[in-house]
Length: 140
Image 1 (cartoon, rainbow, N blue to C red):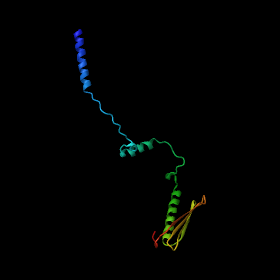
Image 2 (tube, rainbow, N blue to C red):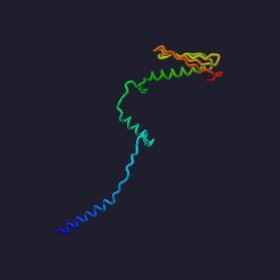
Image 3 (spheres, rainbow, N blue to C red):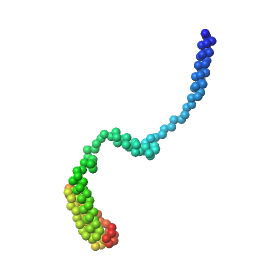
Image 4 (cartoon, rainbow, N blue to C red):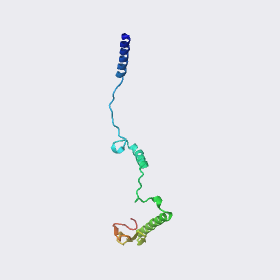
């Protein structure tokens, strides 16, 4: 009986020794995922999308374009169109101005070729002046 135990223990020991010798250790290498820390730039949009999906904070001061009503969008587009027309008139040597709820814009094109734009903030009364020299003829 003792020989059987020794034989089975020896066989078991040889099997364990054989299986241990087939195990190999390799070097562990850290590979970053975030592109800010050396990871692949292709991961950027994926990580940003995950971060934004988890973000439940809403900035109370942020203005959302979807919160604008139809009349507000129309007013904004109309103001842009009128400013564009005034700038076109100034290019042709004609003065012009646009007044809105927020600001007053006066545009002058003098005979020396200088384009002068006065912008007045109606809320604060602050006045900004932009002067462009060297305008030749009717082109900017």
